[in-house]
Length: 109
Image 1 (cartoon, rainbow, N blue to C red):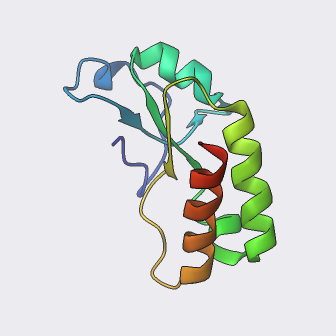
Image 2: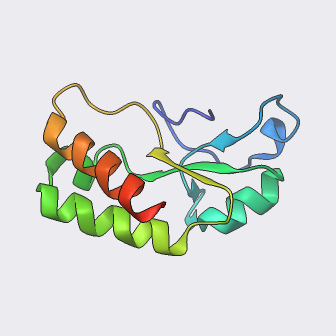
């Protein structure tokens, strides 16, 4: 996990050789937003993420979460793990989390 809790990054180079079987980070790199495929290719390992921690999962409806996850799965790299880009806020509605999981399982079959 490349944590951006206290601020973003302009360069992922320092993290390229970190041990691990997947990478989890925000798609924001400087002023650019990288695709999930671009992140997976850059690190040469599966990408985990896609859900902005303070976005739809935190303040949307279950229907909005379903639409988000459906879109993420549709554009996901071949080796992908759905997840938040960082720690979810403590007030996130559990129904939204459950919806994200259920939709991912349904579409991943």
